[in-house]
Length: 117
Length: 113
Image 1 (cartoon, helix red, strand yellow):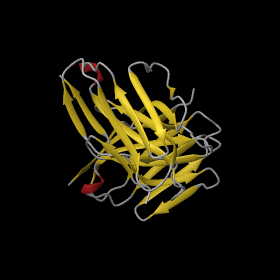
Image 2 (cartoon, chains in turn blue, green; image 1 turned 135 degrees about the vertical axis):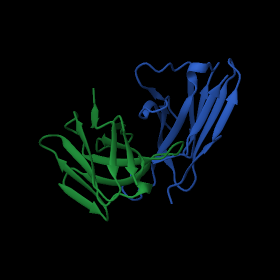
Image 3 (cartoon, one colour; image 1 turned 60 degrees about the vertical axis):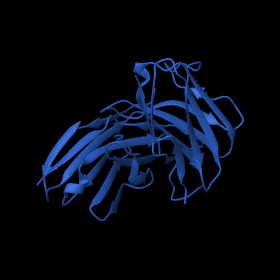
């Protein structure tokens, strides 16, 4: 149980393109989802916290107009990287809180590797 | 703000030897301390965790210790094997919903054959 599906797993696109990443909790309702970004050889850095039906809370230094987050249902959150540029290339990972299983506060998706040319 | 420091950043041990990774945290309200193993290009996988009401926890070759007074916690891997090679992250979080996980900077563990 407690499976989080993230799609796509990788994407390559041209500079200026907007890219949408989906994060779904498959077998539990996730009231809160988190979006992380991980640059090569670095740690996971929280970008924003997403609550179903309300606006996301962004971490300091993360542009909310560039990284649009929508959490319209208890099983789906989306992250849209608008007008992506090469410096946005990174590994984006979502996690979902809920399910109450195994005392894990968050369950992670498989990540999306974004490469902007 | 909350901070988790992790050492060392890289660690190389002979197969069969033990590996120890140490972390400190700044938020005294933190009460849950998970450890994650991440292989290249993959999601972080929870390998062991400890809550603040416990000083030590063991699961086969992996153990974690917590000193809440000193705000230190450590990961111990015994009888290391090649498949233990990965990046390990410690983390800390508070006891509430929608609680952020604060990750350490990571330790790249290499097991020498």
